[in-house]
Image (cartoon, rainbow, N blue to C red; front, side):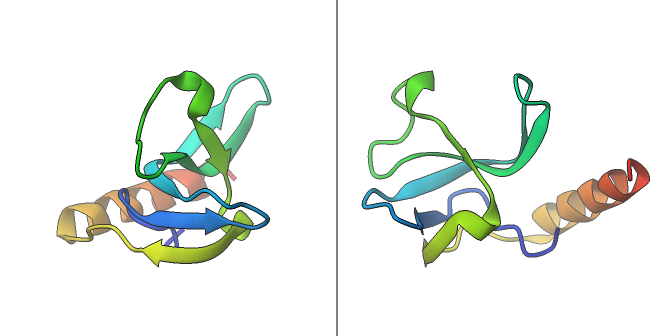
Length: 89
């Protein structure tokens, strides 16, 4: 869980030519009943509608272009999510 990139990170996925900016972490896709590491939108455009949202996992990332903002508030959030995730196992 600690290796999750912060919101605002810009990445390039494997076999992709368009960068994505991460706007969410640990996102649930209810139609698949599956949790993904990230929710991203095209960079530099940002959110342009739900048809251009991409769910992906850390293993899908080929290159980290920019790592987003980190602070103690984010660290506490990641720690809380880690506890919650481990309780559900």
